[in-house]
Length: 124
Image (cartoon, rainbow, N blue to C red; front, side):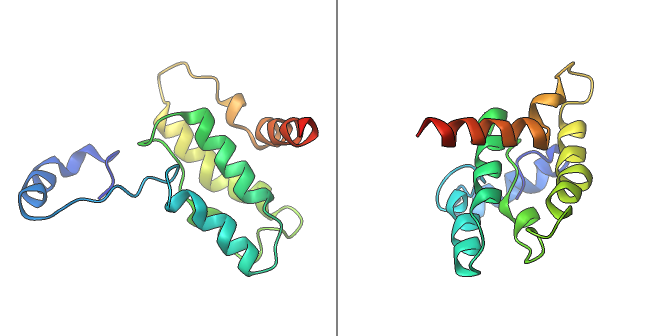
């Protein structure tokens, strides 16, 4: 169940009485490793996994973290595809999440995240 969806509170209470729970947050292992492993299995660059890890680090909230499935497509490395995914799938989630908070979403833009991982790579 998605912890960010508060409309399921009554169902959630009933489920919690009947089942064990295992956290599967996108920024926490084992889920945090899924994208990198998937990309490696398909012989692809790990850049999308680095971008997602940096985005989730910046978000700093397990309930706001973005999962790997958005980037688990064989076309992610095609020209313009990553940009389209970011603009039309990831950023809208963040816009909704931060609506009315005054949060500057520029820090979550693909260009800002790319710059951060490029800087980190150059420091190593």
